[in-house]
Length: 432
Ligand SMILES: [Zn+2]
Image (cartoon, rainbow, N blue to C red; front, side, top):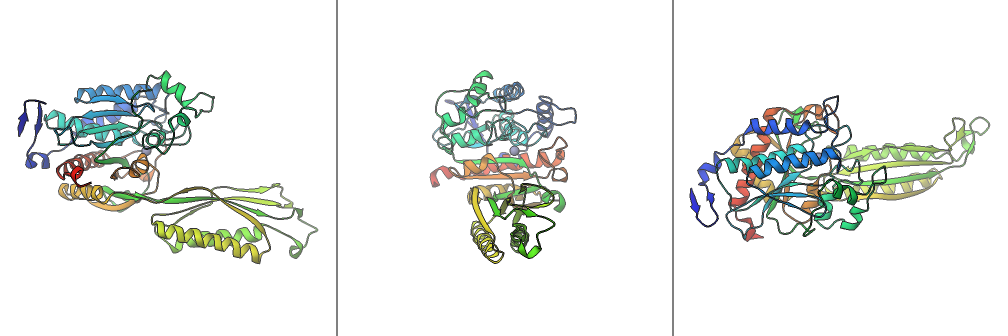
């Protein structure tokens, strides 16, 4: 261990760093304290973006971060950067964070865990007066959930240039208040640069929000990327006709095309299992009368896969199936893409920093993809990024019943700490 007089920062030997573990009791106590803000009767949280509860949560985070020796910066979209200094000011920071906002009937862990695990990492370093080579920015991203102000991931989108700042300010909630006004009202409209700036690596810890880790009894998910998706609106046109007098062969019934199209869409997901997904979330039959053949069916189709080449193939085959079936059944149709989010592949160096950390710690792990979107999707477009998943009870999230085991939360935070240490030791900044 040595101290540089100038900056009063300490470097630790590899041995000290390898044996470092987070303070699990403090992490759990902070998760519990944060859960008090916006607490619901059913044991969940309602701390939607830019409400008074969001402000209280942010204030509490800043208090803890300052106590750990962090300097606070708030950017114009309200993202909070709590910087724990490194001993090489020329090295771009390691970024780790998530979000404190919740769904209206959200849980105690979604987002919060990632913020407080990162805060625990710097708190532990601070306890031991150890600084890595790189600064660590613990980040609270504004409005990840998108429940009050849509879309989600606004803070990370603006910081990475995927959304314009003024466009974000103008977004309104259900009562017509703008995001810009509300940011100002709660005192979190910062100044200075909008852009994220240089970053060495980004890590986000999160509950899985799905059932895979729990069912396999595996403690850590090393996240390789985020599933890609295509949303379609399929409109099938028929001719309205009376359900009684019109013989079946004389009808133009859009269901005659819909049924084989949907069956084949499900078959595509099955053919590309286990990572293929097909969801028909909404069907509207117009005019929607029991005894009239529909004149129009509007069907939402959501197709996903973790491999972009396969997702492209699923897209191509789905379109071909729609064309072929509609031709056979003599049904005219319209097929439009509403949203196309490509597969996110996380950075191999980040993934291996996490894998090394888990292996050294001796936890069970598996490589996996995230089925949900995260701020890390936007970060990954600009900087080396990966995520760390821990199991959640019954795979339940976006739900007041959301729960996770203490030992898994602690394990995930230890993986995050060791990932940051691995990353800092690897001198990535020079290799980029
Ligand atoms: Zn989340």
